[in-house]
Image 1 (cartoon, rainbow, N blue to C red):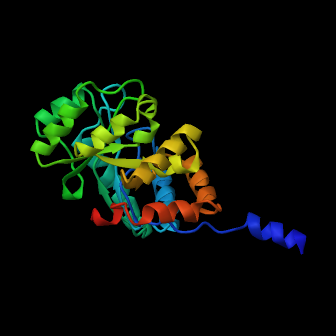
Image 2: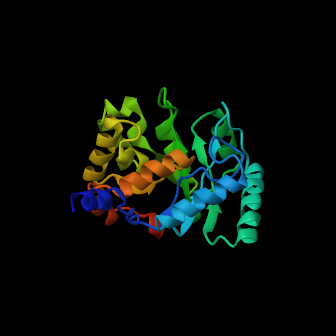
Image 3: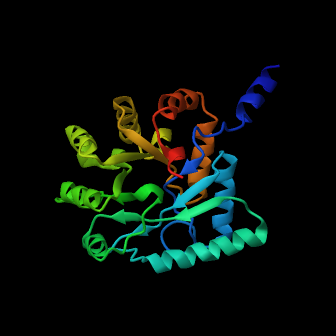
Length: 248
């Protein structure tokens, strides 16, 4: 009996996610530090489907330091993935935008109106992990003037904000919405990131949750989290406040 008990605990199936639309992933093939090819992309999509994800907005990096993607390079990668999905009969509603690093490249793309927005005019932006952009408030205001709704990716991961949490309040009340990473909730990045993500959730500052999925290591971590005892309580805390499934 005791052996069966431990066996059943070990083999507990992951529970479904509390949303069906993912707005942050790196599953388009061969254009950033995510999926290297279409075969890996397909397997990552299958993993997301097993979590209950039905639609995604793929968000490859655009950053002048290392990922100088353009709307065309992103579309090319999407077309490759879409063709492979059709060949294999993989059913998933895949759209694409980008995760824009706030840097000079982004400022130029914004000035040239060369931006790939998400449905409902949302846009995923991210800070450097080293230091915040000095003009983030101005960028948020400029986006709003263009009727673009900024979403700050994984704010819980920026150490300089963790130590000055009043900045979260200022940014949120300026109209910048927050997307925390599912991986942060698992503790993957560390205890401080997890605690900050939960603090943001308790404050009511979390509008979106994203997988930020890059590779199979992330899949394993998320599978364990969805099988854990703590997952239901965290899911209940966030399920009624996030807007993932209102995006499409």
